Image 1: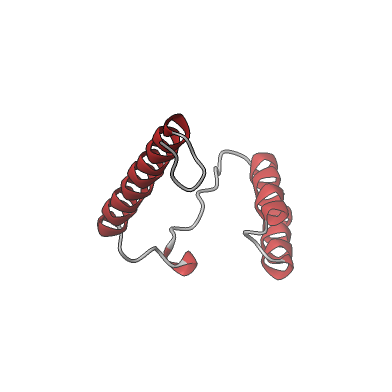
Image 2 (image 1 turned 45 degrees about the vertical axis):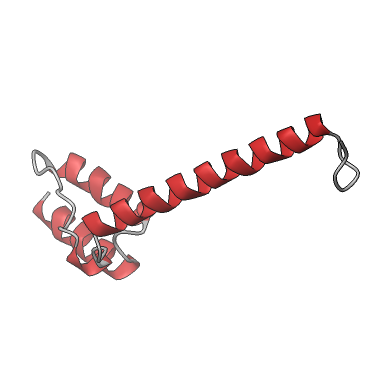
Length: 90
């Protein structure tokens, strides 16, 4: 038996592949719909709590401040202002 030039083993393999792809697509769709129901609106970056900075000593505070600046959490102006504030206490 040949359909579209394919024998029975090829047709069975093709049917199996179609079945597996369908199962994967449906599974992804179900998981995506479940995850969108848990948190329908993502938090805006401005609504995140500010990063906590350890205040045990000024050297640690300066190092943490430099890391936050390097990561882009603090802009140049904020970094310079806080750094000057900490250095003035030293």
